[in-house]
Length: 577
Ligand code: ISL
Image 1 (cartoon, helix red, strand yellow):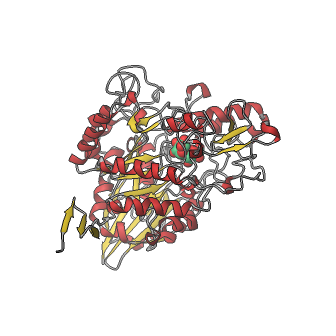
Image 2: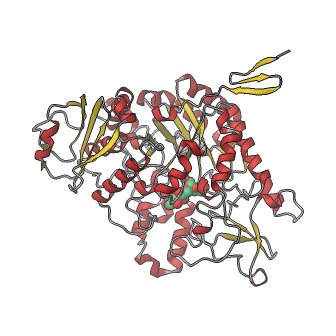
Image 3: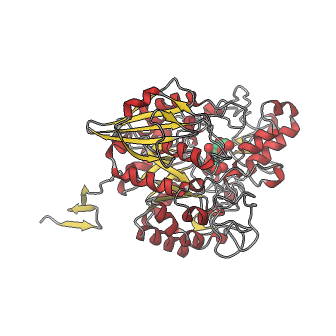
């Protein structure tokens, strides 16, 4: 007799064998607009000066009004906060000042009730040194967790670390374990020991964590530094580098694809989920190898070559001049390189980057909103999933720190320690550049209004709000010409015209060093985006070609003369074929 059982909504059992996995991953992320929340700085509901989960819940209608349909939460797990939550002490509990698991489940429900989805931040390359696993691992060589981490004998009887590798926070990648001759690897802060993914028990722990959150209703993960999880096992010295010594031993390591495929097959493929990889320093070829669907690894990644366009050798602290034409070439490379093969993300801000106001040739002064709209049109309408970082929709600007004492972040503190130790480095990283590009720029509290603490908290904020509070949520909602409503229009347009999701990217005016222009083309539609990135007025005859197109969106109230672009003028034009 044949027994057929319908298990939950996706699996059908026939005589005890799963015969159909009816789960269809709907690739919903291709129609998503994802809003990144840095919980610590978003909204504080209880006056302790820290953002929290109830604060997020209180602002979900604001996000619904903006029109985003997915929220990525930077880490909310239990953590000692050495790296503001990217150092996790318990993957299955919540950092107490943010709230409880119950609050979290309620937040997920409230997000889903509004037709939005939610991504958690999977930090699986390392844990906190306060994690039970690590405390046990370093307590005894016989600990069952000893092999959860990367622990190696030091050189010269333990007086020197196993290799000369440096991490991402400007210090040795090794920390000695007490007075033993052994060290543990940490590519980030000392309080962030790297997990040993060679150990199948570690991989199983991560799979359990994924399942735990997916079963709680999470719709996917932003995967923190996920291309670092596989290390070359020789653990040899490398040629010293001013940036990161030894990076070829841990960036895109030998078993990376195997590990990611295992996560996909064993867990992710069983849910209508999505993964976006934070793949530091990856080239287009690396990203294709990680994201073409047949690989069954990641769905998409962040493309740092596009975002760190004003960095040198990928290090944003190294002085480098922004050139619009170079950005156009790089964006074209990625748009054409991923087209019909994989899927891109579209990002101009996040919690690690300085604010885009005043960056990428935009203006922070008289043309702040006009130029922010020009930038928005340009990045948002390419092919890919656009991300909006909290406050980007308000044109929140960089706070212009004058002293490192105004900053909290471990990264800038370590950089200053290095600059003070090796003064010559200031030639490459002047103090001003370090403060201009440090991560605290993006982490000042969200500006809800122009009151003393910007409506973020009734207490003392953990990080001082921007002194300039003119552009805040209250003001934006009252001003029909605000950047907020411009993003709202962009989101509506994105959902209305299929050419934005599916159209081929065709660059325009590539030689013009002040205009970023392109077309998106299918056999049925054409969308044209023209954005000026200069205060100068530009008269361009080639614009005549688009005179009869329908104007969908502009950052000026009218079109004075079709071939004339006023300061930072930007137009989105459309033609149905
Ligand atoms: O911010 C950077 C340089 O200034 C990046 O190198 C960043 O450190 C890198 O992209 C990894 O970032 C991610 O992992 C880190 C965490 O500190 C970052 O906030 C997170 O985005 C370690 O978990």
